[in-house]
Amino acid sequence: MEAKPWAILSDPFRNKGTAFSDQERTTYQLHGRLPIHVSTLEEQLERRYVNFQMQLSDLSKHLFLSDLYTRNTTLFYKLISTHLTEMLPLIYTPVVGEFSEQFSNLYTHPHGLFLSYPQRDKMDQIIHSINSEIDIIVVTDGQRILGLGDLGAGGMAISIGKLHLYTLFGGIHPAKTLPILLDVGTDNPALLNDPLYLGWHSPRLHGPEYDAFIDQFISAIRTKFPHAIVQWEDFGKETALPLLDRYRKKIPSFNDDIQGTAAVVLAALYTAAKRVKIPLEGQKIVLFGGGSAGTGILKVLASQGAQNLYVIDVDGLVHTGLKSIPPHQRPFARPASEVASWNIKGRISLLDTIRNVRPTTLIGVSAQSGAFTQEVITALAQHTEHPIIFPLSNPTSKSEAIPHDLLKWTDGRAIIATGSPFDPVSYKGKTYPIAQCNNVFIFPGIGLGAVAAKAREITDTMFYKAAEILSDQTPRDALFPPFEELKEVSRLIALGVMEVAEREGVGAKLDPKACEERLNALMWSPVYA
Image (cartoon, rainbow, N blue to C red; front, side, top):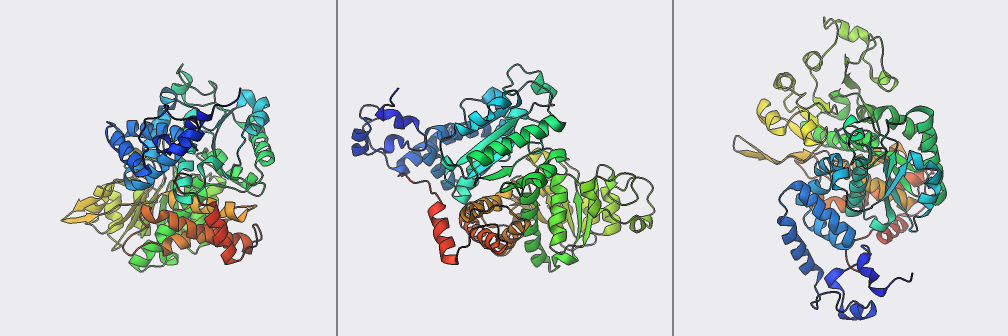
């Protein structure tokens, strides 16, 4: 059936709503289908913001914004970019976690691709049905959503949210982004027993069948979108590193939970180290949580000169005297001879480690709420003037500590960055803004630069360069730039990525002027065509 001219009203990438001019209304036969007044984009923004403020909860605000995206994508991004600080937590962490948990109950409209194992014979057909050019793909299997665990099909909300940030801060055109959910079942009994759950009602796939399904997915993506950047998102700790290692040289891909988190932590430590006047190689760093994100952080810190690294996992401090050490933790195991002098029998706890190591920095990626107790923090603060404390677990409910307590227990001396957003804290008459150690400071620039460079591989050096640039762009007395400056910071990171891609022989050879021109041509802004 031939599309009607007024079908443009149903195309979110082209729809202007009441901002269609009189001439456009004539061209597309829109007279009578819209109120007679022709609105400016500014008028539409004011109207939508009033509607937004009428929503009674954060979740209802998230749904309001999501609905706007499906109707008028340009207006959606313009509204959020106008109210960044207020709306960023609503379209991503922490509210996206709440939406992911209730995904099946709140689902209203299709967005992205659901590739389900029972329909694996249709995968090529489904992927090849995408008609637009794709630059960035964010894919998850929903196994480890934020700190909330296995949410199955609800993981789609994370892929969607990450791609919103690519557009807001990396300037990637929204029509060139593709969120994907690999539906391989779920081990969440609440979802399996819920008749309204929209995913595959089956225990989660593992082993050779899982591996073959991923291989099939990568093969289809390489055929249809050979230059697209693939971001692995929220995979379980038993699959995240193997998938990254297996495919990173086959397709331009990276894992944001591992590499993005590590890079943003590195940038924050670069900046904090300048403030406390102790270089990275002189820091004593304790990391609480030895999963893929934690060991990714340790790997990056070690590569950049950090020498005194201690990792604590379920069996306590990881050291060579333990009977069993997971392979990804072995490079960071402390010598058994070092801990023997501590005179501790059995498991060496976080508090034991703090008391014996006297660290300068404590990082949490454990998803254990309240793990940084008053006793732990008091012990930490006894031996360092300005302890660097990063409770990074998401969402807010999983944070190892809350900033107010950290400032109280250190008498305002702590340098703090959290994984989820927290309001500024007032303590003894002074207001302390709380930095958010958010991967959004890194991955949009990585993706933009890789797209612009037509990178064949996303290398570790690109993340080190991004961390260095981010730290250099951070104002004095802060750990990160304000979100309002992030699009420009992402552009600078993208230029750095392009430089690395050329130097390492994995991207286009372009002079600086050509790099600038290519980036300017790529970066989309929310204005009506």
